[in-house]
Image (tube, rainbow, N blue to C red; front, side, top):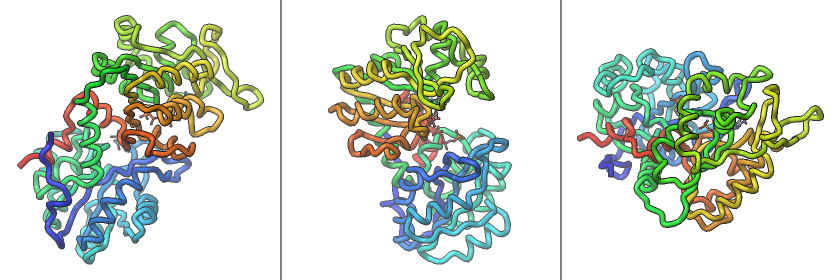
Length: 403
Ligand SMILES: Nc1ncnc2c1ncn2[C@@H]1O[C@H](COP(=O)(O)OP(=O)(O)O)[C@@H](O)[C@H]1O
Ligand SMILES: O=C(OP(=O)(O)O)[C@H](O)COP(=O)(O)O
């Protein structure tokens, strides 16, 4: 168990530097509201109400990607969730950032520009090297305390996550505390009945890590999403190819097909793949096909089919514990939401222990009118949640716990 300090240990009237994870889906340049804002608002509101001067850091995307944008919209969305104004300055640690930080009054909050717009943030280096950067050296002297609330980014050894805790008294925010406790408890929990893991989403490496590291703990893996299609391709079906301008499959196939093939060989009896898939037909409607009847690589598949949904539904209902990582289809489009929503509904209606993780998957819960109360824990983390489940330590949490 970690021994980090929390907001309960923070002296009053501090200048506090806070790391949040507001990394969000961006559609046509518009940042999409999601539960990361709502969760972090709790920490921000508590600090503002306690009269601290609150300066927030966060990242969005990675340089070169379409979702690598300014945090100006994030400040507006966060303000709505906090119910108070959160200011924004378009600099991370330049002159205008320092000026804005110095003119902040008690109880006010300010969001700095995307940390990944500085050269010091991204390269993965040791906490000591990160503490020695200009970014940390410029900002740390302006504060009394550092709070890390970004559990979902705590697997990254980046300056804003691991550099500051070496220079300032460091505390865990409310989101960090809750996520850490829930995910660590899960990693050490034992179950008598069937443990099922539903894995989908876009990242094949996450799915492979889960299978490699949780193979002894999980009885059944139910696959879907892009990752599931790559497994179907490895099993000899004509799916999981880049068609119609997609670039989700072929690179991941090149990088991972050897591992996927050996996983199917070694753990085949634990792994359930879709028996049918859904696609968009020429009338823009949902159509389905059995995977055994697919003999051309020219179509994109956007969800698991109804026979698979019904099989996954009954496996979930027979389980004592169900973990979800990743969506089973393009659920943002209602026509292709059956897999993701079907499994979530089965979990919600069953008296099992459940955890739902994956940045986007948890969005489906509110989009389709399900209640968070029907799940054991809904994590806003993806990669960090997987690492926690597999028992791997998170560098951002470790560094918070140092004396
Ligand atoms: N067959 C598919 N085709 C296109 N997109 C898909 C498909 N299956 C899943 N997705 C998309 O994957 C996205 C990422 O899912 P998520 O649960 O966040 O997993 P990850 O953690 O791998 O990003 C979702 O927004 C969903 O729309
Ligand atoms: O959204 C995040 O991770 P996730 O997609 O695994 O939930 C974190 O903000 C980390 O972002 P990164 O994977 O670009 O380092």
